[in-house]
Length: 90
Image (tube, rainbow, N blue to C red):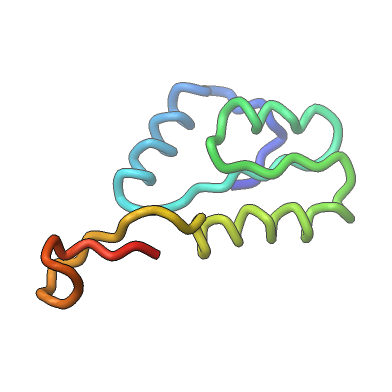
């Protein structure tokens, strides 16, 4: 989602972000140029850059965190492989 950082109806945007999250969709707020830093308060996942030349590196950092979450958590599998609890550490 790309915005000027100031949605006309913040409650609607927050609801859309929540519904997308419940459906397993990651919404990344992207703000570019002056005044764009409001996206940091509105979107849990966001990129805010004052210059568009900084966008690729910043956006890749957020996408990396989505595609490759931090290690150390647990994955619950529904199959019978693994240890007796069915949980794997990664």
